[in-house]
Image (cartoon, rainbow, N blue to C red; front, side):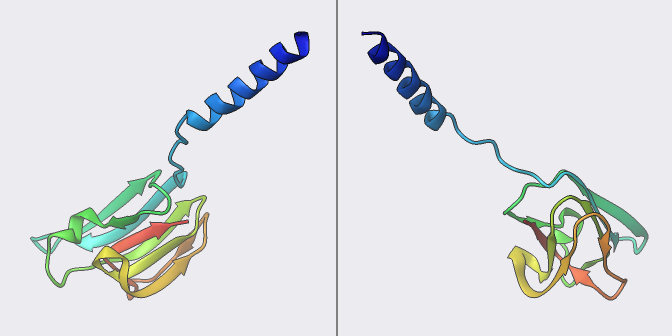
Length: 114
């Protein structure tokens, strides 16, 4: 009788753990970039603890045609792949975690963290 109770408790706990949704993983840290605003002034933007596995549009340039962010710096704990075009399309460049960076010539409009 006691063995049945223990087995029932263990199997119930296991089933409950499967029913709880997994938390979304995120890249811990900050991803920074530069861009020119609509007035032509140099600005710096950042993504703090961005979600992993999702295509992220760079918000400051997303609605502007033919405008890109540049000089990305990946100070997160995840690899970042930057894309020249929106929706994670176009030329790519991979930035290592914890300090990977690109020059002013590295243009981006979207990024994905692993």
